[in-house]
Amino acid sequence: MNDKQVSILNLEGIAWGAVFVWWGITELVPSLPHGLGAAVIGLILIGLNLARVKTGVPISAFTTAVGLVALIWGGLELASPVLNLSFEIPVFAVLLIVFGVFVMGNAVTRRSAAH
Image (cartoon, rainbow, N blue to C red):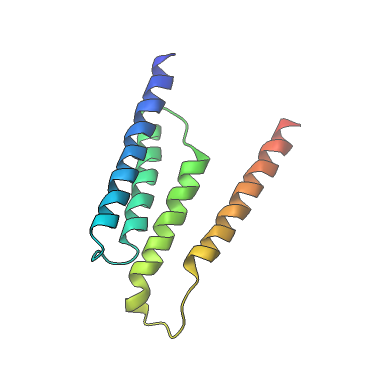
C-alpha cells in the first residue's frame, strides 16, 4: 500500500471515528438542541474532504454529499424554532430524496463518462 492510500485510510478512519463518537455523545446527552448532532456530523464529513484536498487526495463525492445533507438537515432543524414555521418540515424525507437523486445522477454521469 502506498503512502497516499495509507493517508486516505487514516483520514477516513479518524473522520468516521469522530462521527461515531459524536453520535454516541448525542445519544447520551438528549438535552442537546435538535439538529446539532446532524450538523456536527456534516461538518466532520466536510472537514474530512477539506483534509483530503489539503493532503492532495481527491475528495469523496459520497462523504461530501452525506456531509452536505447532514449539515443542511441539522441547520434546518436548529433554525426551525427561529423560523417559527406554522408547519412541520419533513427535512429528513426531503433530504433523502435529494441525496437519492444525487447518487443516481452521479451514477449516470460516471457511466456516461466511461463510454
